[in-house]
Image (cartoon, rainbow, N blue to C red; front, side, top):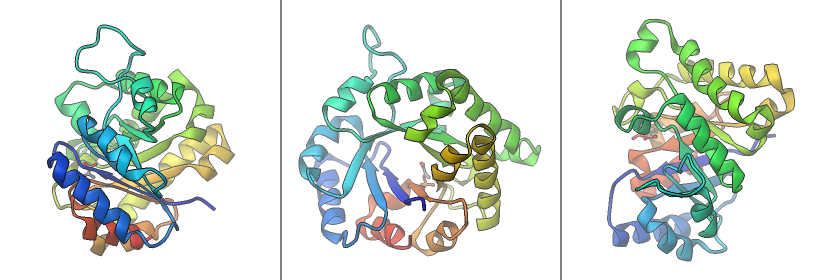
Length: 248
Ligand code: PEP
């Protein structure tokens, strides 16, 4: 039986004070450990958030991670730096990184590899644009995004990773994929992993992301291959985020 996971991606929002208040509200409202839960604040707040979360069921992650180990890479934050502050997860290949900051399937694979090298669990984000969906290229895009990582790190590495399917057209748009549309792609992703390793596929947490809210989470999370969510906008409000968590 797979455990579910709900992750909040705060993106570049809030202040240190509002971030601390948000985690305190989430922690005090968390009344069960039925599923895993984490927040991904901006890098600069992570150490402060870490202090508030010691011993808590709520974990934290980074929104990105360097594709190199160390050295002259201005503006990057390495896997070992994140490990040093107890970071549990790192998003890799979020569609905003791919579209605004030039992340490619190859650099995403390198980031994934760096995260694993320090036991930071990578959350690999994959998903198609609206144009790609309309051209019937969804599965092809997912294959390319997955294969680049599998080719670099090997399928065994997916035993320590999470995948998030986030159709780009559903992120921050208020348009959620229907439960069936999301399930179809989740099932496809699991089958691609299963072709290489059945047991890793059976245990793999595959999250759905794209305008998840408390009122649509329950039906999405009830689908056979959806093991929780990667939540943007709704993770900035403790009540909404906890509402989503509690619908697992
Ligand atoms: C995201 O950015 O990963 C995301 C899913 O955002 P939203 O929930 O706001 O669509």
